[in-house]
Amino acid sequence: MSFLTNLIQGNLAIHQDLLNKFLAETIEDNKFIKSIAVSITGGLINLSGEIRTGENSSASIRLALSLGNFEFNRTSRFLELKMHGPVAISIHGIDIQARFSSPDPETASRAGAPEGLVNILGFLNVKEDTVTLDFNKMPGFMKMLQNKLGLLVLRNLEITRLELLEEMIVIHPSLKLF
Image (cartoon, rainbow, N blue to C red; front, side):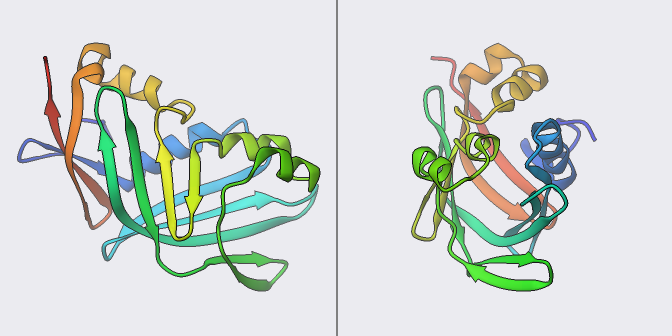
């Protein structure tokens, strides 16, 4: 599916399949995150993933999020997502509910967390029940936008509104040329 194929009344609709493709490409060389998937339904963004916990073991993780505050302009590109309920973790058939938090790289390293896993999550900031994505720090995001939209458009792109529809996020863009 082309990035610009799904236009709705001058707005850009990004289907969850495109998000999943981007996420798969982002983690394809990561040896700690096995998979990550997004589904958008009922006004929620449902994330599920599988993380390696050892050579032959992994943990499944699920969480539900809704849209919060955002800013997307020439200098600041972030999105806040509100968590709905605890993070569900399944390890060897044992189900655990937990709180999600940003790893402090130094503390996580001392605790034995794989360095690659801590580094790939450097664009996340978690406080209480809010996850903030900093797109300026996200590996591959700016390159993807430059490839799809072009550098001139990217520099002048602002987002005025976001909304969730079934299986897609609708972006209401604005181009600011001055």
